[in-house]
Every structure is written in C-alpha cells, then in structure tokens.
Length: 254
Image 1 (spheres, rainbow, N blue to C red):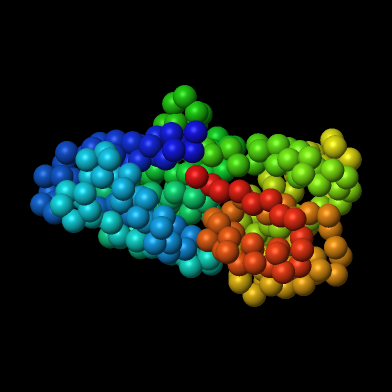
Image 2: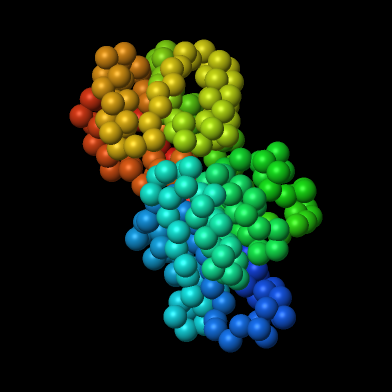
C-alpha cells in the first residue's frame, strides 16, 4: 500500500508539471522546475524521489529540474522557504511529508500547483475543498498516519502482554499533528485501558533529554508519533530505546 501511495504521489507531481500553463511554458524556454519543500535533507528520500520521477518519465537534468528547500527540522522556516520557491517561479511545489510545509505553500501561492503528502485530513486542514474535487491549486495524498494509532497500540499490548502505561513521543514544532496524535492516542489508549504520558522533542538534544525523562519514569513502552523529523532520526531513537531498555513502536510515513 505504501508503494502504491508513492506511485500515486509521483503521478500527481507529473500531472501538475504536465498541467503547467501553456502561456508560462511559452514565456520560459528552460525546463520545468519542481520546488521540493521538505523537513530535512535526506539523501535516501531524495534518491527515491528521483527514482519515482524516472518511472514517470521525468529525468532530473534532462527534462525536469529540482530546487530543494529544507527546513532542517525548523518548522518555523517553512513560510520563508515557500515564499522563496514562489519567487523562483517553480512549476510546482511539492511538500511530501508534513502539514506545516503544505500549509506554508498554500499560503504562499494561489496559482502554482501544489502537491502535498500529509498525515491529517486535508479538508479539515483547509488544503482542499473536498476529497473528490480538491479545487484550487492543491492536491495530494493523505497517508492516514493518525488513524493507525489504535492498531499500533494494540500491537504493543500484544507484544508486551500486560502493559499499563505508555509514553508518547511527539514533536511540538508541528502543533496540528501534535494535537491529532494526542487526541487519537488518548482515545485508543482509553479503549484498551492504558495510561499514557506525552514527552516532547524537536531536536537531537531534546530526543536525548526525552529518553532521560523516560529512564526516570519507566513507562512500559514508547509510542513514537508519526513525524518526518522522527523518521530522519530513527537510528538515534532505536539506539536510545535499546540503551534504556524501553520497547518502542515507530512508524514510517511511506
């Protein structure tokens, strides 16, 4: 399913490039430019992005170019980075993995096509009018990361047999996703009789500090909230979980 969503996402990008206004193409002799607005610079993710474009007939440097703008984990930078891509007059803005990037792009332009990937309801976020007919200049994929909270908690319960208290690691830099995660985990935990505490982290140092807190409070397990920053730090998270002997459940956006 995740591979299917990746193909769907790349297809949307290809469609947005193909739909680039004919007038704009006539006025500009250079190849179309994809503006990539992301949380962190990830060589692996960029390689997969290139591969997906290639499967759709787009080869970087031959018939398409990419302008990368990375917030380097600082979500507050998204508005200025989105504005920079608009000034660059890119053909399409791609915000593949987080709500703040998609919202910043949506605020920055009403004319440049936007392709987003978010884990929250794009209608509720105001990115599209409805799922069947998005309208406006934005379209994308909802990865439904919040909806799997109950299943992940259920798996933790099965693996640990008798857990009573879990910790939830969440990124306060994305308040929309933070609220969604806390709400959904609270509902799912309550349904199966689990208590939970929330610990916050938005930097490498804060991840280490969060595990120091967990080492003192000793929850039965750690639920890592779905967040691109945490995906990029999965090695650090796995190392800290092993060091402190805390069973952890992580997730991948795609």
